[in-house]
Amino acid sequence: MNRYFYIDTEGKQKGTFAPDELKQENVRRETLVWTQGMEQWKRAGEVDELQHLFADTQSAAGTTQAQQQQTVVYGQTAAAPASQVPQAMPKTWLVESILVTILPFILCGNFLSLLGIIGIVYAAQVESFYNRGDYTASAESSRSAGKWTRIAMWIAIGWVLLMAIAIALIIALAGSLTGIGDMLNV
Image (cartoon, rainbow, N blue to C red; front, side):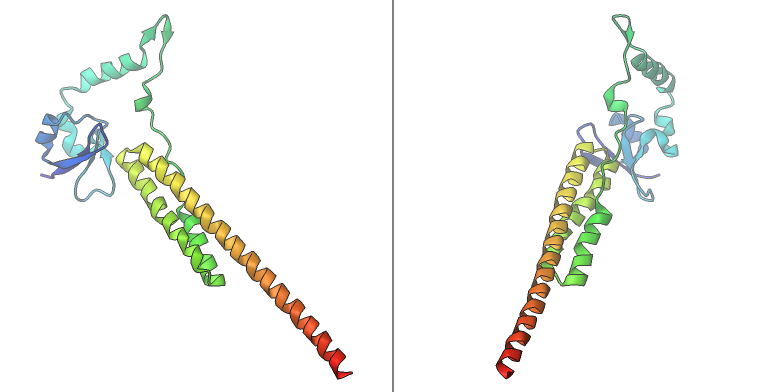
């Protein structure tokens, strides 16, 4: 029998519990659970081993959900509660942050582009927070990843522009020195 972790209503991880102990913890069908061997967190209602926890509440839950979705207020049908509507995962920025960190460093030797590593760290957290059900932390990590990715990108662009200006000045200076050398040889 597996031992499970779960995410409580405040977004905190609790565990480990045997399946029967989860019932005492008031775990519901939509509660996220995880046990060894699972790739990611799943809703308790999707785990076969936990189905017996919800067998006696299944008929009551079906009517409760129907009642929540069909609640009549002043003659109008209300929508399902917002907490039941899953929100889309925020953008991770992982590919972008890796590219703006590695490419400028390889191509230009720009060590300042390594600030993009901060973006990579935040980008790696987005999906983790989202899978745990913490949408707020996921959105915050996405915002931070985007910010640090843009910072690294602008540093890379600035570095390339500085290199281009430096090369142009060197070529212009070499050309003018050649002209001065020709004048001295006359």
